Length: 328
Figure 1 (cartoon, rainbow, N blue to C red):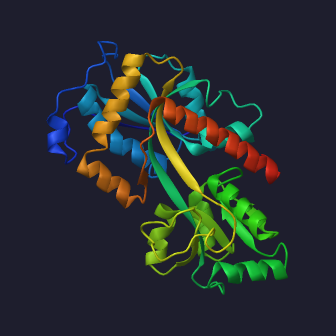
Figure 2 (tube, rainbow, N blue to C red):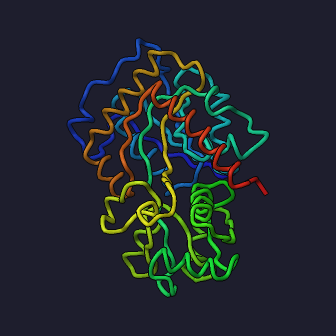
Figure 3 (tube, one colour):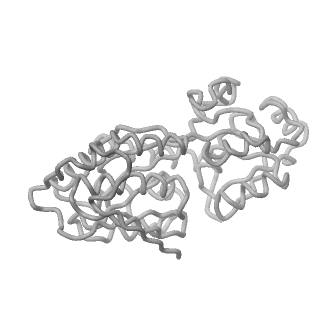
């Protein structure tokens, strides 16, 4: 397990001066008068960590308490979620949850030590992160159709990398294979970084990965994009057709993150935290940071966010069952 902390004091500067001078939001004196720990299940520099650190400083300013971002990595992000589920429901511990530990894991792990729906208070979905199908620049495949033709001609010969079994990368690739009638060979890695290293080296043929990970490599001419793995085209790549547009199913590969508290979080704290997220999302510096990471701002709050999480759990259970995906 890897743990990293970083403090964000209430008066620190982020660039949104008007925001940070605003009076702290009130939680009817229910908010604990001590630093708030925000648990993140993934390593620094990843999608969830970027969002957590973007939010922490303006939320500290809004709520009048320091926020500490704490990375608890391991077990597909579930260690942080498990710790948050066991934390006191007083606002002292929050979770920047992610689609893998807070939706996919319910279908993937038989002994998951928490229930993603029952054991958390949904506060606010914050952002979504689109994925795309890419191949190395030296690949002979110039289009998704080229890749499909080669895979059909030699079943099992096309390999694809993922950040691990049950990751969005894995599930999206499995759905693509099912929609196109392909027999692809999955090569799981312990995270996105080693998967990307082998993709760039040409040791695997393709991957469906997040835009933040692949965009710099595309810009440097190291990767070639073949399709957006989303139902709508990706704003950063408006000319890139989706897999759906090319006739390969209704694939919508989006990682998402959102703020949760433990179950039974008092209404006053839940309301104040959601209002602080809304205020933070108005800060130009936060919006720039999210845009730089190729994320899409999400607006689901409270019960609506909870219904979304429950629907995601059901969706991934169906995806894993249809594709016979299991933890290996």
